[in-house]
Length: 137
Image (tube, rainbow, N blue to C red; front, side, top):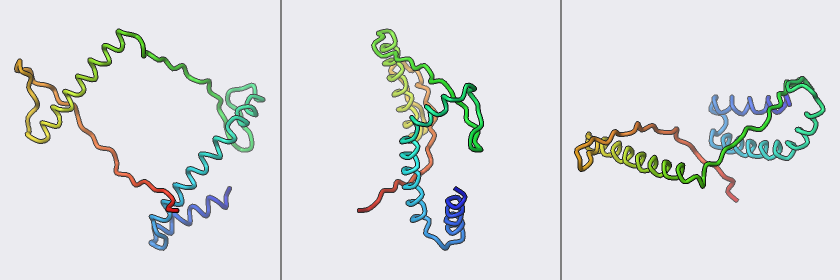
């Protein structure tokens, strides 16, 4: 593992020093990330079975500290008529707040209903820019 960490650190340092193309390094690291995720998925079931040998939820093995957690409960509200109605109302309210925010950006004023009620605009935030990468075959 140490050798892999050294190689990755050298790649990062090479990018910082301008000796390695950041695009090439990024592409290689993203491919490695996908490969590692697949490897983890492939051994996950065996890992859970092996972890079951330990009675405690938290245990040490092979120099690592592991903590077992139970799955969480998920609730599905679809099909509950009252919930569906409130969700539709919320969706409409969100659309109006979004339109008011966009109007405020363009015209420096929030939207107003036919009754003269000001539609409170939602806050707008922006995500970080990203770059996608795939292998060109």
